[in-house]
Length: 142
Image (cartoon, rainbow, N blue to C red):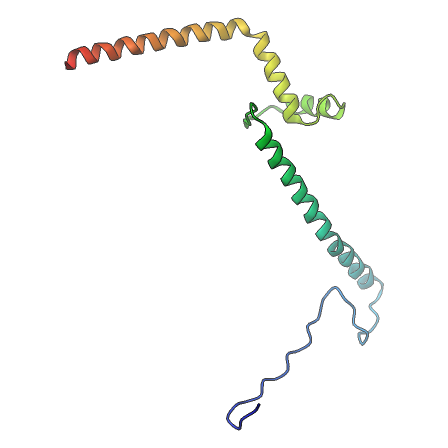
C-alpha cells in the first residue's frame, strides 16, 4: 500500500556473483577465462577442504580425550632430531613424529635408569630435609 507521504524504495540491484559469468557479458579473453576457471575450481573445493579439516580436528580431539595415560608435551628439538623422527614416520615405523618421539623418550629413560634411581634418592633426601626444617620451625613457634 502506498501513501503520498512515503517514498518508494528503489529496487535492489541484482547481486552479481564474481564466480559466475553472465550471459550479457562479453566473452573474456583467454587469460581471464583461465583465471575465472581456476577461481571457480578453488571455490568449489572449499567446502570439501573445510569438511576434511573438521574431520581431522574431530579425530584429534577424540584421540586426545581417549588417551588416558598419555600426556602431551611440547618440546624443542634440533633439526637433526626432527629429520630422524621424520625418517621413522616415512619408513612406516610410527604413524606420527609424536609417536616416534614418545617411543624414543621411553627408551632413553630405560637406558638411563641408574640416573633416574639417583634422582629419586636425592628427591627423597630433599623431602626428608624439608620435613626436618618444618619440624624445627614448628618447635620454635610452640
